Image 1 (cartoon, rainbow, N blue to C red):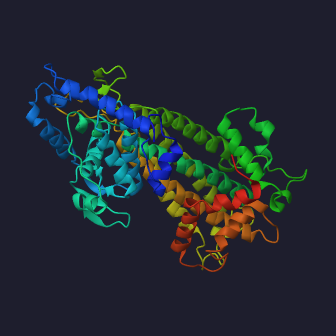
Image 2: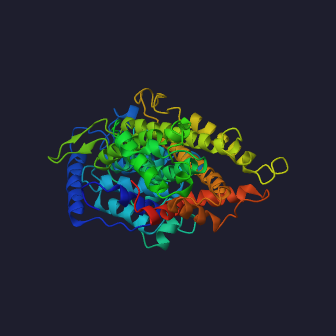
Image 3: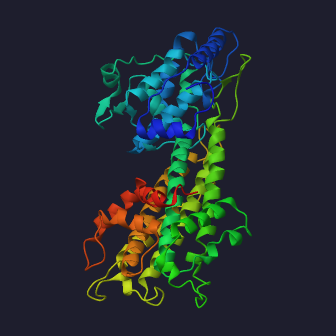
Length: 507
């Protein structure tokens, strides 16, 4: 880790897969330089915010030198005021890593030992306990970051790599790590950032890049299983509306449907299937719009990864200046935007699934794909599960970032709610995984029922990946475990890998 931005892939590697962290020599030099500037101000006669004054609405009080260490401890302790369920390990690790990335820029004024303590915490796989509620997204993610800082101080609770709950001080000692004694300005530097919401954004983007390709695979299986046409996905038709995401989604559909005997069986001049339902025909348009939304969010995330967010900041010429860069609006907006896109991709998936179950629309398949309709219910209630999730995703698509609420005696009178936007997006991504899993489960059953016609090699590979865990059509079975198997195959990328083993990398 240097003074420059982290790559999104590095954030995922550390947060999700436990990659190790090291601060390079140049970053350590810059950290030391900014610390020297803070120490000079600490001995000045003129008060400086966060160095020799209180915070927020209490910033007018000058703090005597002998009280400043207590001031920093008190800041972290009082701001570690989260409540509710524990936040996921990968989110906390991303939060700590991104705060360390800002410390490594040399713009915050912390001691070298403090930055190294964050690296030590991450490398030891000790995860501070952070709670669901507490952040308004301005001045950044104060409460979540304070819980992380509290652990670095040797206070509060952490979980080890096995999930055991430990006292932070004992856990640090067991790994040969020393608790940090905070000096002037350091408390602010550890808690004034958008790191929690940014970490969740980066993780969501990584998940959505996988899920949108999986959505294209699911759509292709539904088009095939419902005897739809692939003619509408032709490159020249898509080029008439040159959105890059749409073009990529259509190209994926063409690749996944290539050499399908089912599609070929009704492709002749007598075929009149040029007006499939919108949920089939317009899949590239919806999936493509979601892709373009993810691309915009990735642009914003890239800018945030290059940012040094703190207040006040130490500028390269040694000046220490207050600012408002901690406001989470840029991140909050795209988090909300992604939740809208996720809800719509799930919605069109549920509509494609529903068409399989209705004898008036499924082109010759049994009602609900049941073995003996009336005795068996087939996938009737699997679609109910999809519908319940989609309804929840529509509620989660209501933006959090428009709901500012004032705090800190009206000093912080407009906040971003970006943390809340990020928390609901995580639930949305989980819901999309489940909706797509049900569509693939249902589409695979329909493809089996189209025998002796053979599906495309790519969709057949996906079907076979499922069949290693879930049996083919038959009388009713306990359906929930089959859905969960399919969810896991979406989440771990098995379906995507199976298709790409045939098609090559999808766009």
